Image (cartoon, rainbow over all chains, first blue to last red; front, top):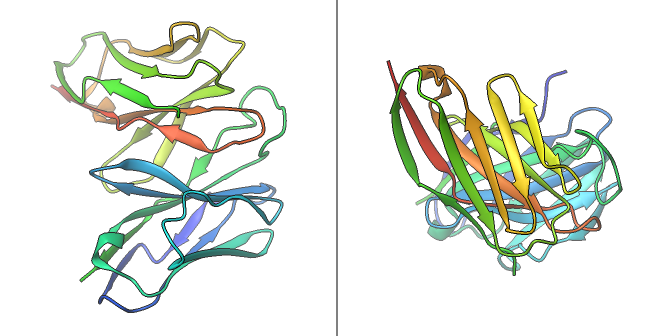
Length: 120
Length: 113
């Protein structure tokens, strides 16, 4: 299994530009999470989906951020327009079950390698 | 609002030493707790997951304990090795309905040979 795949791994852009981050879930997983990591705030949840449906987007900073799951295995996180304060590492994670009672390691979230975004 | 705190923020030990990393959370109504490892420039790797009904989990040289009533978890690493050098993050899920992880800021461990 290839694990969670994210692209690009690094992105450098100028303020005001649109940025699109991509994530491919582990096959068979039905929950998808987008997190952002900064030195100041650590890891924070932005949004998560269960079975392609957004469940909680309260962590999305503002309307400039949007996320979609066009199919069960793929997601995008878009920032438009980007600002320097959006610079961070963005992680995508997937799990086998979201919001459902499970046992053992079924709830484990598997993280992608992250996208390091720099907005100049 | 659930807050997760990890102390210390950084720790340096010589190879072979046993060590304990601490994690505390403010709301004891958690669904489960996970310990992750993060290497520089890399993603997170799940180490151990403890369900709220469990008190500990073990994997190799790692042992994680959970005391919900006191809002604490510890990660015990036995016979530390230089390869254990990384940042260790603790995270909780606060309810069965919501599966988003709330993270601490991590403890950066350095094991010298």
